[in-house]
Length: 467
Picture (cartoon, helix red, strand yellow):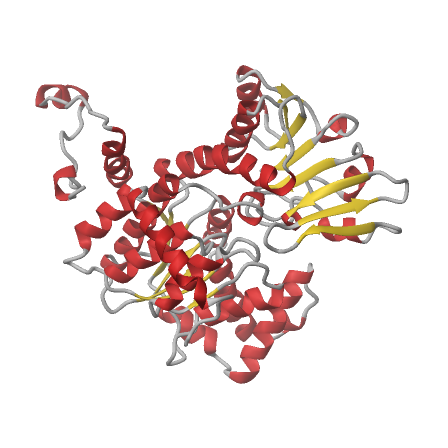
């Protein structure tokens, strides 16, 4: 089979959970029904680089139902749910993902997902964090300037990427130019991936159009706030079975993700301090009843640290050396560079004890002075590394947006820049989920619409969707 998963015998278990998820993903199922007859993605090759979970399996099957030829890899070495990967592979859709991949395996999986049986690349990409997009862009850059591939990487992961690209260049010179020339566009799921795209567009380096799915309100608020509000504490408690009530919790960052994390910890009755924020977010945190301080000030008292900034070097090795005994450190930002894990492992005399395996990565770091801290998911996404990520309903909002973005890329000839989904589509995604709550909306009259100067009805009417 054209796939690589942990255990195909888990497919039946995965299918049962997929059946449950489909009932909790009303918007995505409505979009699937709406376009099933039209099949707007027919004949298109789509590569996905996004956490291979049960919810993602529903997205994959939606894209396939709409006509796409799909290949998939996860976007995190710990986030795959193996029964979800097995269910998709058993259906005959190529998937390359399992929980606990090495970095070499992870990037090889991304490359295989980008490479179709005839050696060609995808027409469209669903990305989360921008890794599939990065591999193509770095590949093209390396073909134009071979010295780019022979340079020393800035991290272990960069070294792995460069080594892979050198192997591809040796086997098939010009491969990435051929791939890039056929990509119609990418829809990007997360904040950090969007930042990468915007930076490339500003520098004139973007090789194909991109749709910023993250900043649709029904993604950023639902996934980043409400999803984290559910899954952060789920991950921490599954990892260590710790009581959070009364603990001093430190949330680094107060964007949408940080707000969701702070709410989650407050709901557990932890005492929450917010750090690493700008003046406006600091004022919002104060108005939410939170303490605002610095990481350095909290080191003697903090029990739990959560990084949620999307930036790098937020919690340093020096910080962790000064934390109180038995402190818990974790990250819920997309990448793994918010916590200086490599430098922590290199501390002279440090003792590392694995508490649980790759199914729930928990490591105890004991310093020469005898005090210890616990690091969850090796500084990667704790909610997916140590738990199952966001719930079905939240991901229905995100993946409804992803599907509509893929349809937009398929139907339109977009320029090489970063786009938002139209506000009407954002509202329609919200509308598709309201029936789940038996919610009823007041209808705007034509007179009221004329008075405030808006259209009474947008082009995407609810009656077009059967749910």
